[in-house]
Image 1: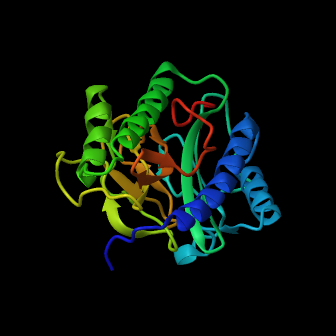
Image 2 (image 1 turned 135 degrees about the vertical axis):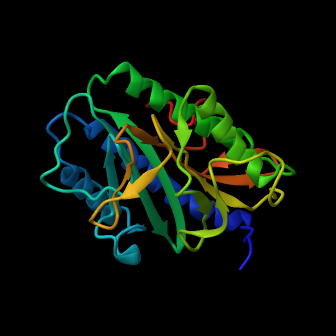
Length: 261
C-alpha cells in the first residue's frame, strides 16, 4: 500500500491522539529526577492513557511488553522499563510514547536530562532537538521526502554527531507504521513529493560517536556500538497547504518543537 493522505477530519482525530501524547510526555518530563525508576515512568504513562481512554500504541506491538520506551545514555531506542533501573544525576533518558484514539495514532519522543548533565550530553540534546526543528521546516507541499532526511543529517554532522541508520521515521495514521519510511540521512531532492494530508513521524536518533548500533539480549534495547550517548526526539507532523502542523503539541504553541525542554 502506498502513502495514505488524510482528510481534515482524520487529521483532527490524530491531533486528539497527539494531545494525549504531549500531555503524558510533559508530565513524564517533570517526573524525571535522580532515584526515579523507569517503571515509575511506565506506570504513570499507563495510568494516564487509561484515564484519557487512549490505547497505548507500543504495548503488545510485536510482543513489546510496555506502554513506554525508556532509553538511558547509550541506549538509542526501545529500552524496556524496569523497577530495577533507577535514574542517576547526569543521565539522559529518552521517553518514547504513542497512543491510538478513535483508531488514529500519534507518536512522539523527547530526551530529558536528569539533573545536571555533562556539557557533551547537553550539546547532544540541543543539536538533536534542533535537527528535528529543521526537519519539520521541510514539511511543505512540493518538497521531497529526502529534504527532511537531509535536514537532520546535515545539521547533526555539522556539529560532529552521527545519525542512526538502522532505525527510521515513518508514515503514521490508522496504523502506527505506514508508508513511507523516513531515514534521517540522505541527499536532498529525492523520494516522493510532499502533499497535503501526508503525516510523518519524524524522529532523529543521533549518536555522540559511531552511527553503529546493536540490539541487546532482550531483543529490544538498541545501544550504540561504542557505548557513547545517544538522543532521540520525535513529533508526528502533518503536511498542510499552510506548512507543517505538529500534531503532538498544542496548536497554540510556537517556537522550538520541544521548547518546554
